Length: 424
Image (cartoon, rainbow, N blue to C red):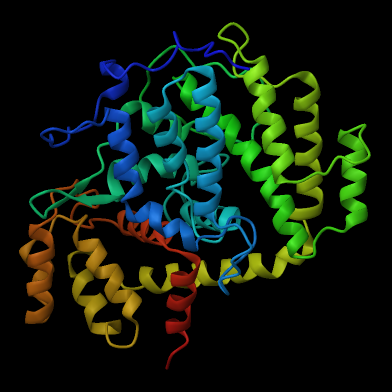
């Protein structure tokens, strides 16, 4: 199976186009890691990765049901599937793992519902005069935004800077959309500015490894979502038996994560080739489509999810409006401190976070308390990253800062912050 058919196509660790890092990255002495392995480690130690353990995959899990998949478990599943395929086919193992572990770092809290809510807010407050169609906020593109501009790591000197991931990993993150029904995936030939990509699935990744992660994403989530839905009581044995009849002639075949993943991995390894692409057989590709349609009908579109969706809209919407109300240009930090630091800790958390991305001026500090001024000066001094919000010149820039803050939240933190809004 496989016979390392892609060994001649694997991403090379000396390919400067693939390993280029925007802004550069400090060097390490005696570092045995490849550039892609170093990316894997940087993502692994990032807050964006760690927060996924408290972010929804499909089912809201604030109560901590250990049997329900969270976003970080989904990422682990994708890494397992993708790295197995890459190893069998002879592709770059380190690059595949790095793309897989980082592919969802831009995901909003509350799953795809949260993504839709943030998209609505962006269109209302940032692109309100634009005729832009389709999604403006989508997690694949937000993943590259987090990798390039938002997520920070501490360097050996105790300062904080951007992640500076390689081009190939960033490319795999933005091109991973597993919602698009495609088969026979092939990498695009041209290198491009990733910020020019306008919608999910618009282009393929520039590496075979990115194509593998895209296929693995779909394989990983469909089976696990069925397992979770069964635990949650969304699916009956009769419904699963009917699904099995549609995809298998074997009456004893069981539709579950184990079988779906094993069968799809084996099929991809058997059928893929540099000539045909990353490919499922016609039979398995049709099975995958049937399973996906079943999931959309019985899980993702289930009316039992509606209360959760309304709750998520209330939480994120009210948090945005609360933070947005404190905008005052260069007086914003003073307004944040004056109004809410004592009663609403999440407001202080936002203000402290905002410091690291803002070009602090003397006017921004003149109306704040001495203690808060010291905090602003101390935090600002250790941030070497890009100051993407400038001087908070416009409401649109400030609104984007709030969106970035909300997108990084976990479900649990967002819920607790919302509860602070209810305090007198």
